[in-house]
Image (cartoon, rainbow, N blue to C red; front, side, top):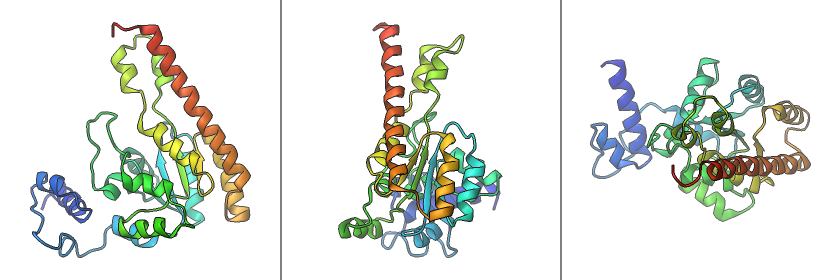
Length: 253
């Protein structure tokens, strides 16, 4: 079997395991009539491995446009026992630097759709991992029932909209293409739930978070609150730049 075919088969099997029958059919593999999970894959995949181990293990969700400092940060987290879930290109980038990460598409059972800059992370299995309150039994029941991975840390920054609209020769399509939706949604969700997780929108904060984790095995509540405020401020700043741009171009675009 050629490598491409093997990759397609693995993707199909993973998607069937996650209940995504439609995309599995598109890959050319019919799901069994009953017991979709049984017989799909005998060898445990990275996706299943993470699901089994990380319900209450330290896990970081990564979806960034600016990868400054990301390798050093994730290597530091790895030494502290963290696992990683990352959007496709970020997972590939980390893999090149020796860090295994479960792709969000493998977790959700959905490939990225409506590319470029399409839908990648807007899914209950992602947002469930951001919303989960470890002190609520019904939340923990949903975690187990739906294969949700709770995230301790959410690392996210946005498509470079501001930089795009200041670049010489850009057009309106470039601006809209770089107008991030999933990133701000993810950041707002994580910032809202700062009591249980850490949200990072600025690489300048990686060192502080690593330091606290090394010294105390957790990020201080005060730090999480400050990072939450910073995250909401970044969302406001980003949205303001969009509003100003759209007002500037008028209604003819």
